[in-house]
Image (cartoon, rainbow over all chains, first blue to last red; front, side, top):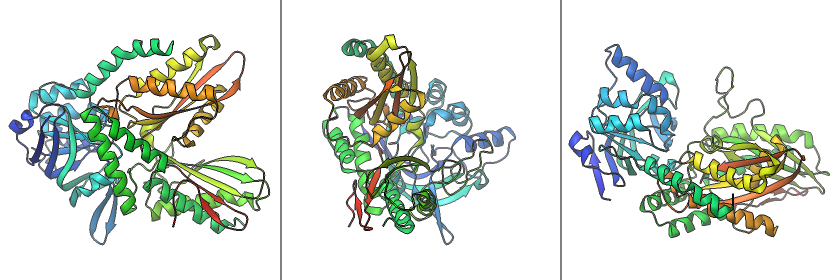
Length: 199
Length: 293
């Protein structure tokens, strides 16, 4: 259970070094993407259109922030993670095509994503749900906003971050999935709980 | 007198207090969970929750970007004047708070999918009314996040299953919810009445402070049994494993139809935001959940 400080772009080798339960902090560039931005990025890829930024080695953040504009400048007010399971639909292709190395969110992801992370060398970092001010504090600057036509929560916000975390490695590049382990253990204790309750 | 402007101002203040500062009982429960949590991953999550809580309070920023669906509970004394104007004041307050705090606009038309942009719409904010005796007005706001709302559950059990069925239903709901409702959670559990009554009672149970036992010793016993059971699952803070899946279970009930055994579980995230105030007939305002200087 080591603590790592990573700088973007993150290499495949660095991503593969990480194990579940490790803690990481990220410095550099991360970008937000929810359902809509994932969808559009994959559409761009299919049509061989260039993305607004090169995503290789970056971290994708499942987040729909509260952002306010002060003059010409965007300021992130609150930016906690959203539930990641919705992005299970896209994430394997996303990792394959764009080689992001870290996926940041809450609640964990499923087998398809876990398999892609193992194959291409990426990890899932769990950020504390609801801890929106803490997350916003580590965001130093909004570098750009792409695809704002999708609306504030669904747009792609490109962010400069410093020691963004703590992120708990919950899926590593070796096929381990902490959320699935916990869920398995929970199912195993279910009968014991019923018995204790006399239910 | 609780004039329109006072009601509006107090409601704005309550919304601001609720989303930026947790009531003392919730804060203390989270601090205790951090002290007693044994799983390292769980402890990391609780530390982040506590740090975030302090920072939100200090900077007067919403602790979570999801500032929820806005629900008011109004206890209106029968002698309060202009009762018919209160709803309008609460809608105005919601619009103002959305801009001033700010809150995330969360009122979406379910057919056109258009967001109204100011947290008002049909039945939004939602107001629960209760008429009491006297001449004071008590306002409570419950901004309710979507992640935990999505795992609330209603079970129309068979009377033969009884309390055993109720217990099983609560455990199953917690397990099915897993990491999704941002644990550690508070559970409002209710039994009896009918489908609508039981879910309303369960949600209202979320308003009860979590630092004192239920005055009914039988219910207190059931609450502590359900608390132990939910925490035996090991789901833990944010679903990463640990001792604290729930901070508290609050139970309420209504008498039921002989053929029905309705059970409801209302799930609240760790950011268990609520705020209350009483407006007295002389216009004096007393804040009940928060210290206001």
